[in-house]
Amino acid sequence: MNWKKNGAAALAAVMALTGTAAMTGSGILAEASDGGTAGQEWEYKEDTITMLIDTDTSMAGIQAVCDLAEEKLGITVEIETRVGGPDGRNIVKTRLASGDMADLCGFNSGCLLKELNPSEYFIDLSEEEWAKKLDDTFKDAVTVDGAVYGIPLTATSAGLVLYNKDIYREYNLEVPKTWEDFMANCRTLKDAGETALIGSFGTMWTAQVPYLGDNYNVMSQEPDFAQDFENGSAKYATTPAALRSFEKLAETNEYYNEDYLATTYDDGCDMLVNGEGAHWIILSQALSNIYEIYGDEVNKIGAFAVPGDDANDNGLTVWMPGAWYGNKNSEHIDTIKRFMEFYISEEAIHAYSEAILPEGPYAIKGMELPDNVYSAVKDMQKYYEEGKVGTAMEFQCAVKGANCGAICQECVSGQTDGKTAAQKYDDDCRKQAMQLGIDWE
Image (cartoon, rainbow, N blue to C red; front, side):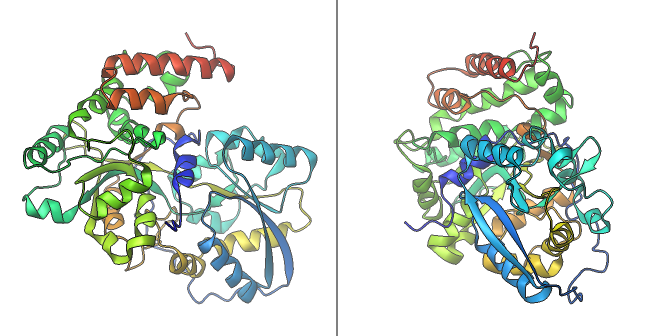
C-alpha cells in the first residue's frame, strides 16, 4: 500500500514528550481573522534559506508553501531531512551545539523544546505583530520563559473515536456522550454479530491511544493532575479520575476483532472504511492514510471524543503540532521572519491544504477549514468552537513511561486489570522521572 503517512509518523506524534500547554479552551476557531492575508502584497527580495525537518513528516504541504514563497517572496528554500524519534532529536541538539543548524528547524513543541535551550539558539518572535495570530494553546506550547519561538508546522490533531457512519445508520445508533453509552453501543453491535471495536495492537503504539485520548476527562476533574504527577505528588493508581483511564481500557477487551493482537495500523484503516469494524480509538492522522487509498470514501467516517462519565462535559484531547523555529545565529534572520510570516498566512495555508488536507483545525486564529475537509474533521471542529478541548498529557507533563505501549497492550488484552496497569505505569514513570532528575516521592 502507498500510504501518504505511515504508522511511524503517528508514532512520533504519540511518543513525543511534547509540551506544557495547559488544558484550556482553544482559540483556534473562536476569533475572526483580522482582515486576513489573502491577496496581500508581499515584499519580493531574493534570498536562499535552509530548512531541517524529520522524514516522518509528510512533505507535500510544506513543499507547496515553499514553492509559493519562491514565487511570491523570492525566497528559495533548500530542504534537508533527518530521521525522527530520539536519534533525530539528538541530531538537532548536536547541530545546534556545533553551530551547524539550518536556518529553519522543524521540531516538537512543548517539553522537548525546553531541552534545546531555545533562548540561546532560536529567534524570539514575541514582538512580531503576525505572531498574535497564533492560537493561544499552541503559543503556550512554543513559549519558554515568556518568549515565543515557533509557528505551527501543520494543523492540530486529536486522539478520538473514529466510527463508520453506515453502521451507525444501520443500527440506529446515536453518537455517545458518556462512556456508559459508548459501551452500550458496543454491546448492541456485538450482539448483532458486528466487530464493535477495531484493535490494531499488532502495531503496539495504538494500544496507548484510548488512554492518551482520555486526558480531557482526567483534567476536567483534576485540573492539577499533570503538574502533581510530574512532581510525584499524584499517581494514576491512587487518583480516581486518572485511574478511570486504565479502567476504561480494560473494559474494551470483549469488543475487539478476534485477531486484534495481530491486526496492524494499516489493517485498521482498511477495516474501518470497509465496515469490518464500527469504532476505532486512534489518532486523527489515520484519516489521511484512508484518504490516500480510498479517496472520498473517507467521508463514511465520523468522529467523536473519547467519552467521559459526564454527558455535560464532553471534550476532545488534542495534540498541538510541531513547529518551525528560526536559527538565531543565521545570517538570514530577516528572510527567516518573512518566510515564517508567510507560512502562517491565509494564502500559504490554502496552498498547504490543497496539497494535503488537515487532520484537525488549524493552530491559527480565525483560519477556517477548507470546504472539502474530511467529514470527521468537521465533527472535531465543534469541540474547538465550544472550548471543549484539552491537550494530551505529554503537553502538560515531561514524565512518560517508556513502556506505556506494552502496559496498555497488556491491559486491553485482559492480561492485567485497570488498577494493575495503572500501578505498573506509575512504576514505569518513576524510572523516567529519575532520568530527568525529578525527585519523585
